[in-house]
Length: 231
Image (tube, rainbow, N blue to C red; front, side):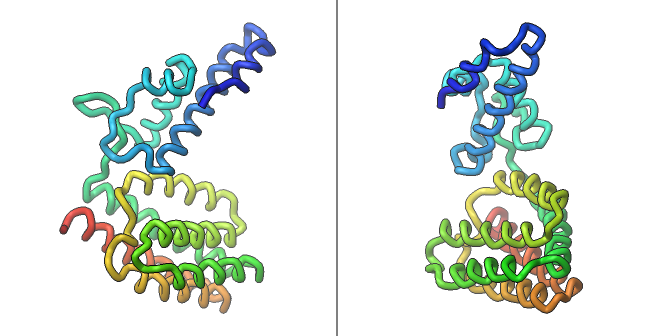
């Protein structure tokens, strides 16, 4: 992807705005890299070379280095003996990630039980129904619908700070290989877990909603650990 829009703006920058221009380019490089994580283009362990990214995006290395530094700060990249690479989580890292996810998803369900609108609940019900109807052999489709369900849950909190925290955490989930829905039977256990969360939200029961959400994440964690470390 070419940064023609940025290059077109270069002439409009005054000499004192050079730092702003670099940061603007760095932000766009960062967003392109994040999209690469989300699409699966960059996988755990993949080597990341600044010069390759600069050439592909047709920018100098300076904004690329800024973007890569930011990704390192977020622990999405790590320095290895062979150079910069997409971070790989060990068992302890997975446990830490899911421990925080359990807390935040539980809080999201609690807030949703207090603040979700009828349209929020209706939207999640529709996604849940699609999840149940999807073939249990289509892991990618199940993962997509699961992500949509959780996004709907986040929106139903009507708390922008919690949503930001959850979205940031979900970026770290990109470091996990594959999806738990590749595991046999995970769709069949996750579907009633989604329904239990929704039932509690619709009943305006924050305590039950939080506990159901936390149980859902603990079960996802256990499936993940089995897939990554026990097969």
